[in-house]
Image 1 (cartoon, rainbow, N blue to C red):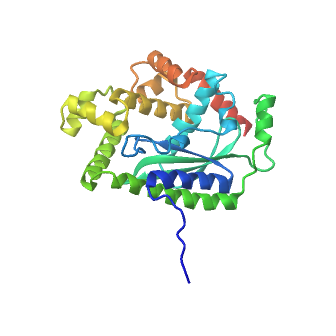
Image 2 (image 1 turned 180 degrees about the horizontal axis):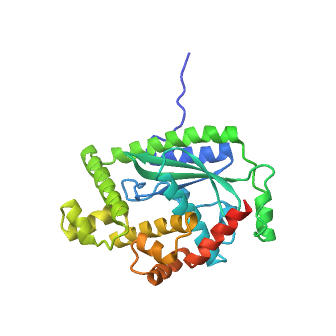
Image 3 (image 1 turned 60 degrees about the horizontal axis):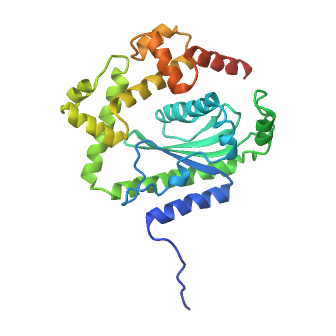
Length: 294
């Protein structure tokens, strides 16, 4: 009897990317990670999963470079809507994008805070036709997508959930546990503050008072924890809430501006157009027309 060692990468920043590539090959999908807090880096400060930080599927790339409005629609669907939905639950769900394709999304939360999103896809439902609004080239790409194998996707859900746990463990091992717990608590406090006060004209000073810190310290802390300045976080939260209100209610733009903390409907429209590529009224019409076809 004898034993022979099998070659296997020992460093997490080596075997974690290889694990994702194996899952992609085995299940015939492209896996993308949305890193909510910019935590996936190695000791040298490099993103060891950089390949998976962007949507690489040809169907996802279709029309994005050629059309600013299409690119904005993709960002709105896969970033704003998917992340907003994932914050409310910790279980996998299917996402139907505006181009008609489907993808599996697996949220990874810790202490009730969304840390990562896995996107696995894209695929089509058997017998489902491509949206008639897609150009002929897009419809051809759609028909070439594999039909969903629901049994296989269920297995992928479990594996990506486990993979997410491994990522959280790797991140926790990079720093002292006490510091991680403190950062997790501060992230929760900042997000709770935004959620509870986003309809008000909040300033950095208000958050600093809530955290019992100086404005300078609060500014550095937010940038460190979320990788964006405080005002960018405020704007993100307001736009996310506005997207939901435009899609799910018939409130006038003036009321939506009030509920999301914008000083007036004109400023709200300008910011919304800049962030989403279309005016809020046009976005709402698109949502209603899509709902009418379903």
